[in-house]
Length: 249
Image (cartoon, rainbow, N blue to C red; front, top):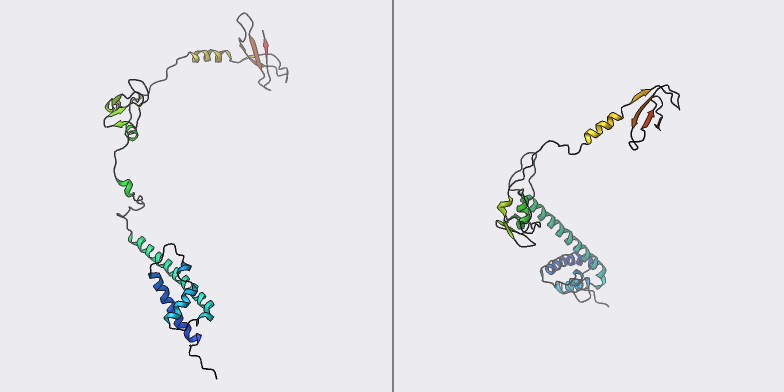
C-alpha cells in the first residue's frame, strides 16, 4: 500500500505562494543590486521558485510542476509594480505643478514673462559692442591710422584701435549726429533742357491725309536729330488710327 502524500494541494497552496511572492519581490526591491544587473537577472522565475520552496519549507521540487504558472504570476506582478510606479511619479509631478505658484499675479489680460534662469539673472558689465550701440557716436575711426575702431575693445573710458593700438577717450565720440532736413538743390540744368524738349514736342496740326486711313488731318512735331547743317526730322501721327511715320526735310 502506498503512503498518502503530505504535500498540500496546489489550489490551497496557490494563494499562499502568491502572497509570499509579493513579499519576496518587495524585499528584493529594497536590497542593493549591482548597477549593471538587468531586472531578469535579479529575480528569475527559477530563483523565485527556489526561494518560495525555502521560505515555505516545502520539499525541493514541489513547485517545479507549476513553473509556467509561477512565471506568469511573476510577470504580472512586475507589470503591476511598474504601472504603480508610473502612477506615483505622475502624482508627485502633479503636486509639484500645483505647489509652484508665481511670485505675483498677472494683470487682467496679461501674462507673466517666463522666469529668468539663475545663471542669466546676474547683472554683468555690458560688452564694448553693447556699450557702443547704446549711444550714437559721431566717429568710429582711428585718428592715427584711419581704420575702423574695434568696438569690443572698450575698457573703462577708452577705446583701443586693433591695427595701431592707439587709445582714444570714449567721451570724444559721444556727440550725437544731428541730421537736418533741407531743400533739394538742382545741380544739373536737366529741368531747362527737359522743358525745351517738351516744348519742341508740342503737337501741331497739318491738313494732310493719313496714308493708312485717309483721315484729312495729321499731328506733327519736329526734332533736330542730325547735325546742325542738315534738315530736321518731322514726326507725323494720325489722331484717328494712331499711325506714325517720319520724314527728313
